[in-house]
Image (tube, rainbow, N blue to C red; front, side, top):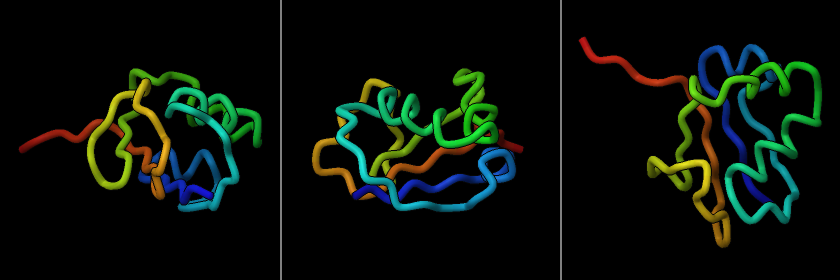
Length: 82
């Protein structure tokens, strides 16, 4: 079981801020493919991955990052400074 967190406009599109997901996805990218199938909102949230950042267990990660042993995956828009 992985806790999936959504922030900002991803939360709005997915319709939730968090959900527990039972998955065998080996990578973040595979998890995203599973999540896209959950609802139209999820599909919209992940329609352009160039606008999405990810953290696995609170560490920034790439979409090819492995999920073995992960407890939490968070999706959020790119952060800007200023």
